[in-house]
Every structure is written in C-alpha cells, then in structure tokens.
Length: 401
Ligand SMILES: Cc1cc2nc3c(=O)[nH]c(=O)nc-3n(C[C@H](O)[C@H](O)[C@H](O)COP(=O)(O)OP(=O)(O)OC[C@H]3O[C@@H](n4cnc5c(N)ncnc54)[C@H](O)[C@@H]3O)c2cc1C
View (cartoon, rainbow, N blue to C red):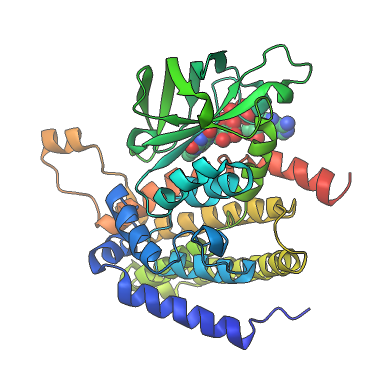
C-alpha cells in the first residue's frame, strides 16, 4: 500500500492551502493563532466564504452542494483548516445532520434545510444526551406523544453544545415507551428552538466559557413532518449519525497546530537562562508528540484509503481507534502548549476578581488561552462517545473479542 499522497492529492493540498491563506480574514486568523476559540460570528463568516467556493459541506456529494471529494481529500482539507488555523465548519450542520438528511430525509426536508445548513443560515445543535442517558443513550426518556399532526414533547436534554446560539435542534425522543427493546421506541425529530416550551440553561465549563447547556422541553409542539425517517426507527438514524461523528474526530491537524504553537512560544520563554526551546526535556516531549502525530497520521491514511476503496459510505469501527489516539494526542499537545507558559499560564479569567483587585493580568493572552484550551479539551475523551466506549467497540468490532 502506498501511504504517500499522489501528485493529484499534493496539487489539491496546495490549492486548499492557497485558498485558505488568501481568503481567511486576518483578524480571525490572528485570534485563532493566539489560541482563542472561534466565535459564532467567526464561524459563520468563514463557513460562508467556504460555501461560496463550494467547500463548506466538504463531506457531502455534489448533488447536494458538496464538492464530492474522496475521503483522502476530506482529510487533507480538514488538516489544512486545523493547522492554519482557521475555524472549523459547524459540525452539527455538516458532519452530523447533513449526511443524515441526505440518507434519510424527505424531499421537502432536504430542500428546506440542506442549503441553509451549508451557508449556516440555520445553526443546529444536537439533543441526544440526558441526565440518565449518555453512554447508555438508549435509556433516553424525553417523551413525544402523537396528537394529530403534531408530537407533544416533554423532557430534558443535557450537555447540549451551543444550544444557546442554535436555531434548530435535532433530537432523539421516545415515541413508544412500551417497545420490547428500548432502541425500538425512539424517533428522530427536528425541533425549532423558537418553539414555545423550550428553556435553555447555561452550564459553564472548567475553562470559564459557555459552550454547554441544559435544554428543558415542556409541552413543545413539533409537526409530524419534522420527523426524520420512520416513527420508532430513530435509533437507526442515530447509529448512522454517530458513526459519521467519529470520522475526522482524530483532529490531528489541531494537535499539530498546538505542537507548532508550543515550539514557537518556547523560543520566547527562558529556562535556566536559555530559551526553553533548547531545553533537552522540552525537546524530548516535542519529539515524542511529533512521532505520535506522524504514526497516527499513517494509521488515519490507512483507514481512510481502505474506506475510499470500499466505496466509502459505511462508518468504519476502526474510526474508534482514531478517536481514542487522536484525543489522547490532542490532550497531550494542549498540555505541552500550556506548560510552555509555566506560571504565566495561570488562569486569570475571573473578571469580577480582577475588577475588585485591579491586578494586571498574570501572563500574556496566549498563555491563559493555552490553559483554557487544555482545560476544555479534557472533555475530548468524553464527547462523541467516551474513550472507554470506543475501546469496547474496538475490542468487539475490530479485534473480535
Ligand atoms: C464538552 C461536551 C460536549 C458535549 N456536547 C454534546 C451535545 O452537543 N449533544 C449531546 O447530546 N451530548 C453532548 N455531550 C454529552 C456526551 O455525549 C456524553 O457526556 C457522553 O456520551 C458520556 O455520557 P455521560 O456524560 O452521561 O457519562 P456516562 O455514560 O455516565 O459515563 C461515566 C463514565 O463511565 C464510563 N462508562 C459508561 N459506560 C461504560 C461501559 N459500558 N464500559 C466502560 N465504561 C463505561 C464512561 O466512559 C465514563 O468514564 C457533550 C459532552 C461534553 C463533555
């Protein structure tokens, strides 16, 4: 097997790189280079620029407004976005719901939603997890009772990323509490977040930011034509979606960007009177992470080329290996970036405290942002299916244990 890019793939990478360099607004790039996360406005601006070029829905087929790329091209595109760094497209719209509507949606659902999803005219969020249903998702209790041409939805979702900025939510609900198997009583609904009865409550995460929410649904009326696929067959849709969610989840480009960032900043920091970049222990850590990134890249290419050869429309259980190793590497890379700042990376985002004490910031913004990023990405081994669950999948579906 040839694990090098073909000349066409190298030309494609150069084209993507040149496009990103010439079209990404300078202020967005500057913020991201400082380690700041992209704001909603940044993501919308950038996704629209990509959409004008036909690239926003990078994993969709041409007939639905995607570029119709191979899996290797998609991997190259993501890596270029992440290493630049540029904002990543909204994953709820593009990686999760888009392929679901293409596979299972009605003609009306496709026509109404897909173009708006590409252009980020609608921001979607994912209402799957509940207080008693995370890894064991089939335990979900949020109930949808049919009344004429509507469902009346009651229940609670949790950890709903970006629900506070979302226009719509794709939700798993229980439509048949009597089903013999729990998985057989679930449906997949599209819910307009402006519908009366929806309350969104923030959860502030350990990095001090508001990404996450609880969503309460009290007698929320959802038209039956907002159900995707058959009633009580939502589990099939969810399995398809979760398989896609894990594709690209290795985020090797992001890890590489963090390692590069750490190397650059280490030139400015001093350790024992010399630049930190010359410290043998620092260099050993960098070498180890770069080796792991290379090894993971080769594994990813191996998985992805096999996927392309097989026609590439079925999620592969091997993507669970990429998720586990990718998130471990991402966590180690963000830890390296934070460690470079040393004491300057002390969190200083207690704005009220700052106002009271009138203390100057402890360190430069890049150092505190590196800490925020380190803290938030502890969650990378939890979201999208925990790494323990991924290891269960690998042991059963890949190793046959
Ligand atoms: C930052 C963040 C963003 C998120 N965004 C969203 C979102 O937008 N929408 C959404 O629906 N959900 C979201 N989630 C929820 C996420 O999908 C769940 O947190 C995840 O599925 C785990 O569920 P849980 O938190 O209930 O933990 P639990 O399932 O209760 O697990 C607790 C611990 O037990 C382990 N465990 C559980 N079962 C097994 C098993 N069978 N074998 C071995 N170990 C096991 C887990 O690995 C974990 O360590 C998000 C979570 C986070 C942290």
